[in-house]
Image (cartoon, rainbow, N blue to C red; front, side, top):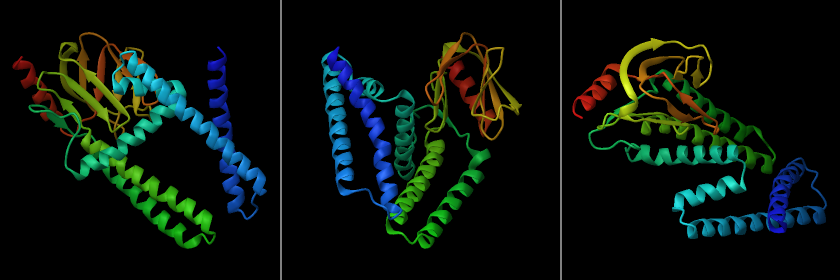
Length: 283
């Protein structure tokens, strides 16, 4: 019990000291640095707690592996145990987005096997995304010339460059992580690195073209009839009627169940529907 209490206290202390470190950097950037003793003490304490958390995480990973967990499952278990679930999912999304740039440069797609049909879905938002990326580049360059204080200049340059790269990663994720009509008749629906839903062939009653313009204003929409809408550019173009319910996970970890219909957008609905029909006929 004492050991667990110590781990929780160390974790809380780490989350408390992180803002303190940011405050120290802000004070230094404003030309009013903290007394040396205070700054050194805070940073030494932050480093000590961070090292303690890393050691505990490694120990937890080793114990999970000894308990029979595969590597990825053990890593996920430790991450969710040591950090808030929302934070872990956000970090995972960022890592996947950055990895998507690598796949994009190599002209490879994630999760598309032999005989599968890849269906794009990002056409309605391409212009908007590239506009945002262009504006981010302009803003970063402008701030690089306008900010006179070296530390603030460095921080804003890092934030601007990283933000631009992350937006490129999001755009790359839309391209390299398409919807997939499997050769076995299954359907995998995705939205970049944020959403991933697999619908087995036996859960699909029929697939049909149906253009709708939901007004939810969010990526995922639901209604009282048990349907799920994956909305891109304010629209969906394909509907999948279900034989049995399908569970899904939202980007920040909440779960839900689609019971009747899943609607989503595809740039070329007839090609996707034909691919699923061909796979179903071949089973």
